[in-house]
Image (tube, rainbow, N blue to C red; front, side, top):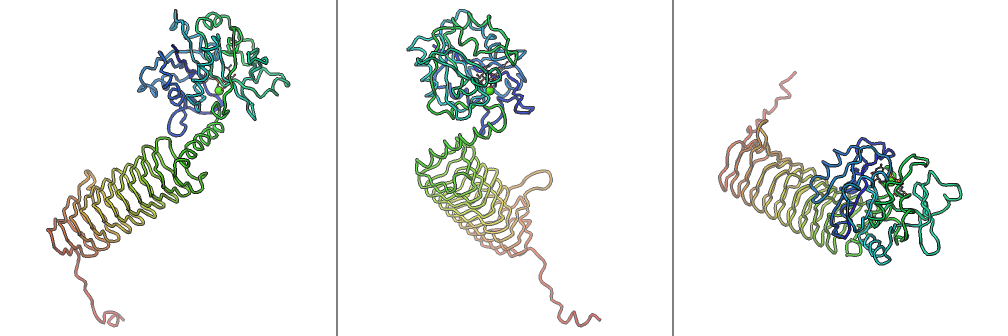
Length: 450
Ligand code: UD1
Ligand code: CA
């Protein structure tokens, strides 16, 4: 049985932010959400989040997460003081407590499992996660004997110059036998450089206590400032991109591409440079996306190409070509084999298969049939200043260049709209509509001016 406690009450001074540190976003999810996510597979019996600095904001942000208990630390007197706040809540509890820092967001569940297992097998009173860092600056240093028995944890600010040379650091992830920890917590003293009650002091007051090294030190990166936040993002991206490349996706110039964890790709997708895939996006096999595109919460079916375009909350069916410089948004649905060209915006618009909107158009709240051709510069006037109105266009209809379709309006099947028309009334099937002044030519007009 394990109870999880996550420390999230600190100020996060080094972030220099109005937002509580643990709510800062890392690839679309807050730091603390990621920590909570990493313990989920352990099926803890209770999950307790210790909140304090801007606690209301943290609670509000975490409200939707089930089974999370909030424990208040009204003044922030250090990590040991934070864990002291659990005492009234865990009275009589006889299992283990897994303590995590809310600002260590890249931990893998396997690592936590391994820590727990070692802790239970060895029947330790405390087991802590450690790592050897190339640059241990800012972390507490861990000193062990030859058997990995922890003898001392010294915070960087309390280190002597010699102690600072130790590259083995405390990851801020601990497993405690609660009964043992509960006995020493009230004895903590704040006689250190930061005048804080350190949880690390409690570690060495119980026995036996052991350190377990993490295999990949990148997992335990703590986020204290914006530089570390950026580094964590890079690590996260590296993990995601490596996994997709191994799964058969081509990334051209991977460093310039970003992909959210929530995105799903398929083998033989090619992602070109400067492309960003976000949210619940799915890209099917044979698609070529980019260069220079942003795709968010969209489903792109097989063999579609998208260049220099922005696509949000939309779907595109097989074999369509989009861009350069198209903008699809607000539930645009593009059929199969369509062509959406340069400077075209589609909003809440459904296009039938093999429809072309090739140049300089805005279609809003529009539904078209199949094989429609929208001429260059065709605009739907869908907004009267108060309400949005729909436009319906039948199969095989063609609009001439620079036509304006004033909604609400319906054009039937096989309609032709003359170039430059402003169409305000419905047009039946098989018609030609001309809605503009007839051309007037005044011959010899110039020579009559003197
Ligand atoms: C802590 C460890 C350090 C370790 C590092 C790993 C201590 C004394 N030091 O240092 O050994 O190498 O983490 O990242 O524990 N918090 C509270 N209440 C408080 C103070 C902090 O809830 O009163 C929370 C913070 O919100 C944060 C976590 O505890 O999530 C760690 O606090 P932080 O101040 O970042 O500790 P570090 O100096 O990084
Ligand atoms: Ca920290």
